[in-house]
Amino acid sequence: MQSKSLVTAKKFLGKRVRIKIDRPIGSVHPNFDRIKYTVNYGYLEGVKAPDGDDLDVYLLRVDKPVNEFEGIVTAIVHRIHDDDDKLVVVPDGQSISDEEIDKAIEFQEKWSRSEHTIIR
Image 1 (tube, rainbow, N blue to C red):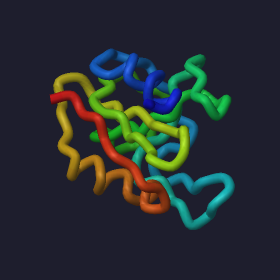
Image 2: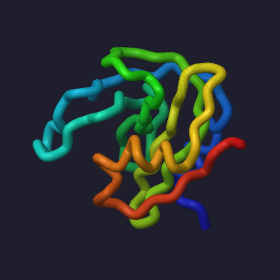
Image 3: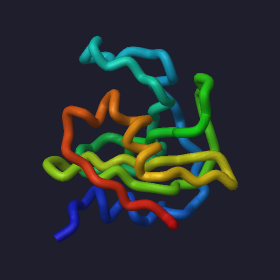
Image 4: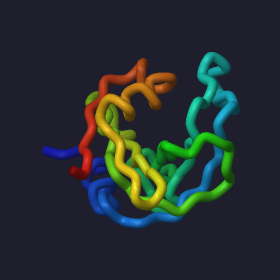
């Protein structure tokens, strides 16, 4: 059986979304100062994940801090042991490999076991 978060996240795969960034590149996690954001990290406003917060998003292939962004959901990072999946958004017309996703999100995902669902 798929997690509720993965079911919610899959609805957005391949779709254009507007996201809010609350942890831009260079910021530090509010609860864990050992986590410094090397990518823009935010959420899909108004789309609730099973944890009660808005659905989380990694914005990749944008190398400067931003507050909002509109792009395409190209992948989902599915956490195996909790219900906290994340969307991966990139600018229009760009693609990204599993390896690139792993490298980009390692700063935060190294503490979780996860897998990707990617549009090919």
